[in-house]
Length: 210
Image (cartoon, rainbow, N blue to C red; front, side, top):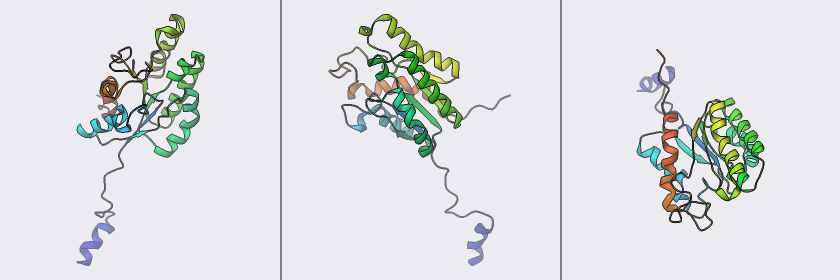
């Protein structure tokens, strides 16, 4: 009996050691659009993402590091600590809306996002960049310059892009809160549907080359 118990240890294996590897972490670094602003956390698209991953058999664990009101400058300042703490396999980078709403220079937003992408990639993690657009009342020149930040960064740095987080949601009173900025709980599944097609390929192992 003792020999049967010792043999696995001698061979470097025991039932306690034969455990699955830790679940890969998806770290969401965002603002109120990802922090379930104005609703229960369970209703937000990030929590719904965790549910969808489980339903579809993905082992990933979602960590939501989103803070309402955050800017790209704030996200950049806290990114290093978040990466060290969670060691994510993938980072969903959803920031910039507050930069635009506050009229911050688009060049600053672009620099901050570029630095965050570089840092995440330097840690060996994948990046999903989430595009944001501003209401038209900010003027066509500013809104177009802001919109262009996200596809330009995605192309330059070779990262996956969600073209617009609130596609099919923004501008609809039935899906937006009274402030016209944040989506209602009823819209959160549609927000997730905007993210999912661009996230899903990143969850699967890369196909071996020829």
